[in-house]
Amino acid sequence: MQKQRGFTFIEVLTVLAIIAIATIGSLAARDWAVGNSRVSEAKSQIITIQSGILLWRPKNGDFTGISVASMSGIAAVPETWGTGSGLNPWGGDISVEADSADSSRYIVVMSGIDQVGEGARLARDFADYALDTDFSNGNLVLSFQG
Image 1 (cartoon, helix red, strand yellow):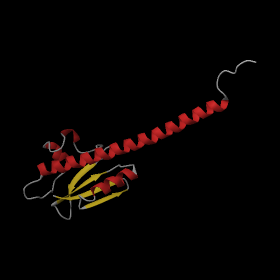
Image 2 (cartoon, rainbow, N blue to C red):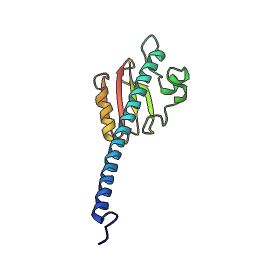
Image 3 (cartoon, rainbow, N blue to C red):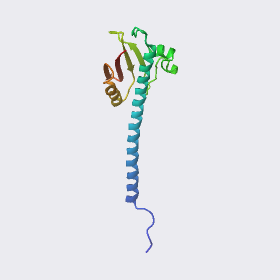
Image 4 (cartoon, one colour):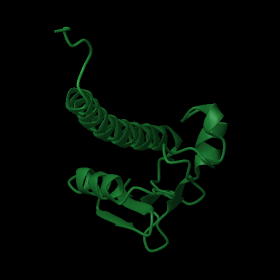
């Protein structure tokens, strides 16, 4: 009687199933890590904007005329940020403007956030620091007191 060599069909299928499950698990972990990276980068951008606002702000505390471009023009934020177009980690825009109801406040808007969970997480993370936070329709709106 000859000895059987090789693997049975069931053994091959079992190994392929294990590889598939491991691959799916690693892809889910990768997506989670990429999402965390985008949220961290967005937080960093908002903090950079807040620091830039302190450099840009006039002594009277009136934020009329503030924008990413005006802060970039005096290097209060990185000059490469320009107008804030296509700047956020999701490829959307970042804008800064004075609050129309109270010019001693400013509003930061990140648009184009296509991951609802990540946008909601950012809004929640800034809830304790901002006067008002809102995330809807892919736009994160944060209102701060100057």
